[in-house]
Length: 142
Image (cartoon, rainbow, N blue to C red):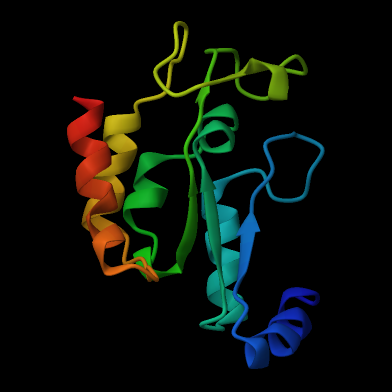
């Protein structure tokens, strides 16, 4: 928070929003989605939100309950990717384990992410047609 508050104050006049991404490595300071969400809530700025990275969410065993109870308007970025199913926090769980969504070996439930975000996410899109993005992803994930 000691960094996010002054950074958001500098970025806000330029219309720049900051998106905090929790890290998936056990040695990092923010390991789970719920912890990043708590930090963003404490910062309390409309210019500070979250990046939901499916790989990091799954890799560090973040809970669906945490995502379902997050303030959807604070999820600024949805990072869609696939990954091999390896043990939480495993040292060999590196970026090399990332896959294209729905590629052979992908263990992530992209349809569930899409459905959850559709219920809770309140994105601000520049293009009005993009407001249908969660609908398109859900239908394509079927």
